[in-house]
Image (cartoon, rainbow, N blue to C red; front, side, top):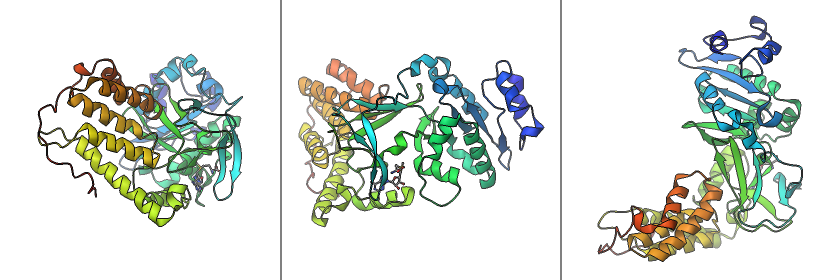
Length: 395
Ligand SMILES: C[S@@+](CC[C@H](N)C(=O)[O-])C[C@H]1O[C@@H](n2cnc3c(N)ncnc32)[C@H](O)[C@@H]1O
């Protein structure tokens, strides 16, 4: 294994005719990749990026990873690779709770074909492509050569799924598809761009009905209903931070995905969108108030209740998890046990769908739900006089 690694590293370019053939790679003892990785180094020789391809990953769905040797080999240590049975219920599309539909002005999207209740899994999938954002430090021609090579190494069905994806710019067809459809995910402390072809069929809505999270150990992306979805309703996710005002959302969506947002939160009457923006500014302000743990803090349970109400009015169903957490901590800080438990439970339920089963906030709220008296916030604000809340003047 070590020898194989040394063989292909530290070279400016590794061409197929300059190295053992790909079929040798799949037969080489202990060599984990399906092909000999092709690599390019940055001009300063600081970093070398290679295409690491694994055709057997996720029961033959396959994956290619464009990154450095260290990151690629670290991924191989995750249960998704070491214990493939953990993926037994992932990538199941035989009887999905949705159908594909063509929407004028938006292209394809997914529509529920049965009632989905909040918390129901819609699907879960492994990435077919992972690209290290830092690989952009390579000259464009070299980076493009690597991603083209990567796509060629995917199993044929998976390649077909890749080519069926939409692009929005007229540049390189592989690069365009990757940049239009990729999702930022954290792997070993670094942001990586990951591509999931089925997830890429979901359109954006500023008030979406589905939430998603990435489980790094399982190398799996989960998507769940975050409120009840009726048959015939489009399943939507958010592409951007929905707590930003309308103008910011429109600008980001156009710049990054090339479309003018036409969801109801973007296209409502100006009086209504102005009111929505005003609620969003107040949400930001109240969050800061509740984050203030100094002796002059004006945070109270009433402030947290107002925050919850604002999120509900905005239909930001996934973000409610954060408001519930604030409320749990605010009640706990005034020694009000049962309200703290109630909001901790509500926060856990939502956060598990939006932040993931292993998320730190989920763990913290689980503890609060069991025993608020043992959490760091318990009675922290009892006896504080605080300053008056300027909650109505939020800007
Ligand atoms: C990840 S793809 C989503 C699936 C895409 N509709 C398709 O047919 O493959 C992202 C692209 O879908 C389109 N899109 C997504 N959400 C949209 C929306 N709310 N309004 C208009 N176009 C949207 C944009 O062209 C965007 O670049």
